Image 1 (cartoon, rainbow, N blue to C red):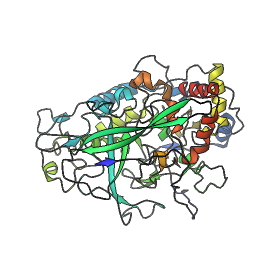
Image 2 (cartoon, rainbow, N blue to C red; image 1 turned 30 degrees about the vertical axis):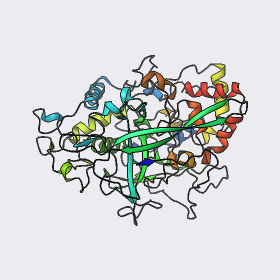
Image 3 (tube, one colour; image 1 turned 120 degrees about the vertical axis):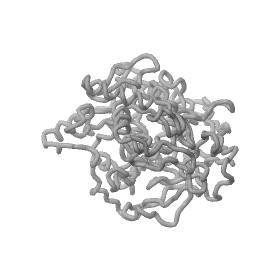
Image 4 (cartoon, rainbow, N blue to C red; image 1 turned 45 degrees about the horizontal axis):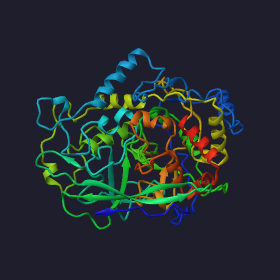
Length: 510
């Protein structure tokens, strides 16, 4: 089967739905955080540090420390993303290292004498977290027919008539698992169970001519689900390609007050600037209530712990306290998968128990953000000015101050520079996957954080960007922007070469 995005990077021809009713999310809180209220004096200090009157063309005195006191010195090798928060105690670093060992662990099939590591699959995309998140960096699409797609997969679902269980989340788009293949396609399996598919990606060249005559060739992907192991897909199946995102700074993003994120939402574009950021609101498996989505390419997970649990279940087939099914994403129509041996009900009860899940969460929450490089370079500062002048900061919000937290000193009251608003934006038909996720429609994506993006080649060995790795450079990633970002993209196309180079140099300094 072939699944091809719409071939267009022009204006947002397929507009996101118009929201005629005002949205109110004042009831959303941060139940995952033991947060202390801000004082009036703290609020004033924050406004002074990151308020709207800050000069975007000059270096902020705090900007080099991208993650506040948690920032680490930028290493010059592939280990730049594997460091713990710089403000972590020695005792907590021991916990971090134990969590790292669980993140690295290769799971094996059941039954096995290795009781602490059995339970893999029966369907899976990888045998460990590290296999997808190499060096805690970003994944990539298969680069050739012989390359494994281990750090990329396809989400799949079909439309549903009603959003059962999510009726109190306004604008929730109903969907349900593909009847045979579930919510995610797994390309590996244990003996006796067929793999669900083989992923193959082909590309069509799409030239874009810049104002000075330079031609940049984008590659438009088509996704092929070859060798379907359980028969044909439902005719209404909708697919979304995803590469593994980088892991740094997750705990700091989780610690941004929900009110600060919602304050930037403008779903009906009341200020008429063309930017209509919307929050994704999802169901929390931990707290049994709606929460702001923060993680994943469409902000489909509310917390680092839930995202970790979903990855264990869907990517590795490991049961856990939040997703207890021992067969992972296997559907009722995959009985060979559901009846295969699994590692539940031993001394751990789940294949990964609550204590181990918490340790992986602690590790993921505390992967440190490296410091900025070349921050005083004249070209970098010029690029920063252009970044703001072209409106990129309308979505890639530079800075926040995290909650003051009673029990998370690493994330507590830090001034951070992630360059994201964590909101959904219509990116136009060129990037559309045409598959909804919670409140996100088929053209909307969460603004990804930009911190660390200049270290991608060093850490991951490539420069593939966007949700599916189609962009081979930062400039290609910019040129794929459409929808709400069309005006900004066109401004980059119209720039002289020197200005474009300065803009990219600024991004590479982050």
